[in-house]
Image (cartoon, rainbow, N blue to C red; front, top):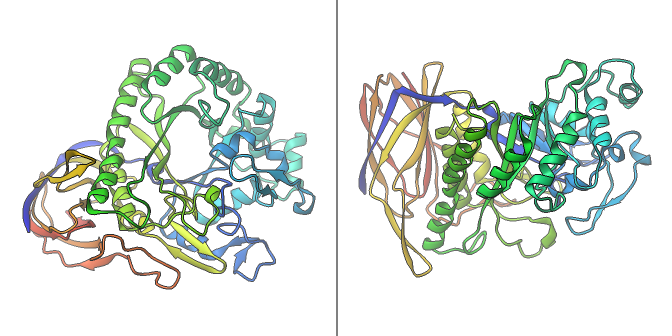
Length: 493
């Protein structure tokens, strides 16, 4: 067992942790929507108007703030009018991005809004720039939000929703440097200004306009986009995407590959800090929020599954990547306003997996459950000190933090999340509170003796959080953090 120190500086706030940092992403890809969300009203699987209830109940538990839909790459070939009206009459289209399977359009705007209402999330709609038009996106905004007797509003009412949806979050395209049209930054900025010019705030709903930023830490795209954008006012968010990829594969990896993937996830901090610094040069008052629209691990497709569907198993290693990333968001609460993990169900770093009428929650889901206390809290500075973990990446020596995490305070309660990435060594840490004292504390820990552990439909609770004993009183106490673990302490101050 090694020794460490965690110092929480309660009197050094960073900023409020926007709950939207704990957002989600649902694309028409593989079995995310069909089977994962939509089973149809006639399904024997318990559902609410076709939306499966086991998934709804699981998501409600973790209080999802926002869900981004319908893509992803799918968004820039999606025409929203295909997904409204009587479902029997909706057209069948070819999903050109994900296996050229048939998109039946049974799950469209109304169904998505109902899904969001059922789970308690705000809807975030991704508009079509690549194959769409300003008129099409403008009409979607009116259809969703206008509260008067226009033809589109009356059409919405005839389709079952007399009241406006009040959708606030809108992105203008997705990955427009690639699958969204292969634009240059300047060409996309021109399109962004053109599209948003025709997106007014119908029905009194304030719009949060989100522009496409870079894939990875492409600083050139950001500079060139903002140079061309000039003083155009209809922009409130700027989105980046970052996938840390894989090391080995989803289930088979060495100790060294365990560390490699966690380390790749930590590149998020550099990306967000550098992108925000560039944005500050054009937006010193930070009126434009930095958004991490897509992030997560991306392993090779699992055997036995359509490789175009991006289904992958989710292990304890993925949980540590998720926890480390959420800790970065918390620590950079003054720099980033939204984050949407890719993706919610059955795709990439999913929180939920389904198979027929069976459903399970993954280790990543449990991290979101454990981290709920951070949402809306005041992020405070914390120092994590422990011997670094040494490993090799190829033929190069590398190192990783020995303890990492984040801290926040809300309503007199400190939430302290701690990641111990070492595959074998526990860390006994001295926890020091500066500017306050603990009255009592409780904790949950997510870990397993096998670093490859994961949940299956036959053993769905293999990796699950458990309560762990905490003796916290006063300004200083000690706690042992197991190897390969995520721990969240809730401390009453």
